[in-house]
Length: 350
Ligand code: NAD
Ligand code: DAU
Image (cartoon, rainbow, N blue to C red; front, side, top):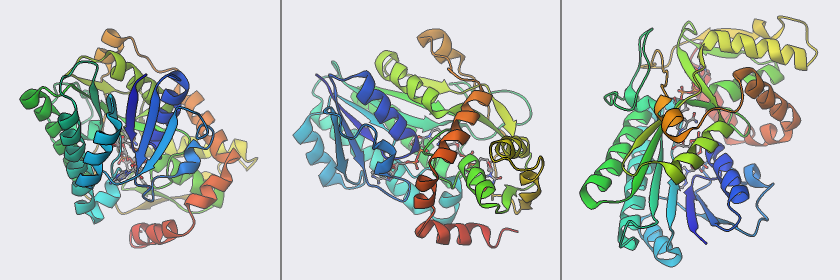
């Protein structure tokens, strides 16, 4: 029996990872540590929270004493670290929150693991990171694992810093680490501050669809359940000290993606063709907006034999169907503080 700590398990990707590990590894004890910020929501796990091998711990990774005592008490065998401040726009308004959680929080976890792990045998610290650490691409090329770090936003700078600490703890102290850098995820339980769920929510509400700049920026989209599978494979089979890029080979210009979503939702909602597209509104661009991301995941595919399980069309349809069937979830997470966030973020953009 192993004891595995998953941080940020009440968030979007974390909840898919927790669900997968709880179901896939019934002999392991899975501990979900989450502060339950605006982005964390225990409803995301209500289908598995009665499982005998699942345990929730509310706590903050920036609290050094708490993290140390947690590791001493539970003597975890492995850590999968996803807890983070994850939204680029919020990092532009409030960078310090990102330094605290993403940098200090990560170093706290590394220190605690280092203190309890007397040998590397059977132990693993997996740091989940982003392709944004590589900076932006022009029209050509893809990020590979050896692409130099060149982060542009406060969010990506904080994630790059945390990646460097993880690598440094491997190099200096021999901590058994592995890192992955993934492209944009989409799927169920995605907080509606990010492009796809925000557009789904606004289409439902017949509210304007705010496209930054000319909508020509490109993102490379991966279905979240395929990310969770990749994390499982890398956690168990990845080479210690190595980095793996994860992506779906699925690039979309923002404006094309938003129009595609409008068409799909018009069909699902029995609206007239073209109705939702009329809601598209071009708004002031994000400061320092990275032009294009694209991931080359051939190392992961050839060395660890991972591949995505769904096409983008299948994944997007599953996603839209989930939001349509879970409008209560959407109403719940968009009530209260979200209204103020939306007002602050979008009122002076147009
Ligand atoms: P999210 O914002 O949906 O969830 C983050 C979770 O971390 C929340 O449950 C939140 O409550 C928790 N958290 C935040 N601060 C905490 C703290 N101080 N202590 C404990 N818990 C805290 O994020 P996500 O989109 O699921 O991303 C998860 C991870 O994956 C992040 O590290 C992110 O950088 C990385 N990532 C995300 C994407 C993406 O497209 N969303 C792509 C690549 C990598
Ligand atoms: O690449 C991986 C990263 O993807 C993750 O590390 C981040 O945690 C995740 O948030 C995501 O970052 P992006 O900034 O790419 O995602 P976001 O959904 O915020 O924006 C996607 C694109 O859509 C981006 O070019 C900005 C644009 N956009 C976004 C919003 C919220 C709009 O045009 N309008 C919007 O309202």
